[in-house]
Length: 236
Picture 1 (tube, rainbow, N blue to C red):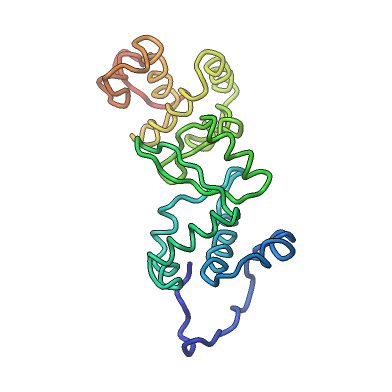
Picture 2: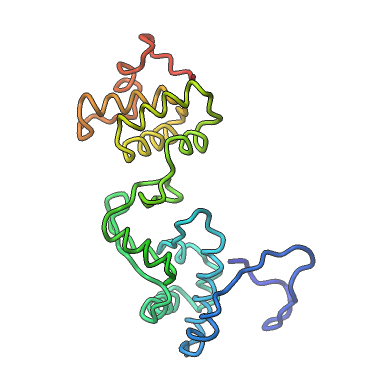
């Protein structure tokens, strides 16, 4: 949320000149929801949620509790963190947002989705456990919307070659999708963005078991599963 302009207090300076992003609101906001809202902070936070979710990318869009806490301008606009929390509780109680608690990095955390048809389906998928860990910035990936191995490769490593595409196709048949997604995540986190390293992780899990106490994201653990006996993990 942007900080206020330098215009006199309480006076709007006007929208900026040039191209501005337009934020769409469903008709039901005006016809059904707005007449129910009787609190200014709730209205502000409701509009803020539409704005924030509009900026998210991908089909599965959600907010986390920290998205609200980390926006100091939002807290200031609502009169402090206590008022912010009260407004959030009202938005959830109103049914505008759906709150779902899931474990992220071993700790329960609230995830908020807009109460739309897609949001309700996503909430149901979360409650059923149909999701995968994603990146630290976007830690949740619904399995129904999870990218296939080719998209994972292009998003995290680079362009595909015909030979590598065949290799990836074989891997997709061999390993569970959540293993593959986690393998890509480990490669990104360790800055070893190449398929041979990811494949070595998958082979290790297949051979030793994924619940092995040794971490799979170290050269010492993974190198024995690289095809090159010298541990050269240059991409192919």
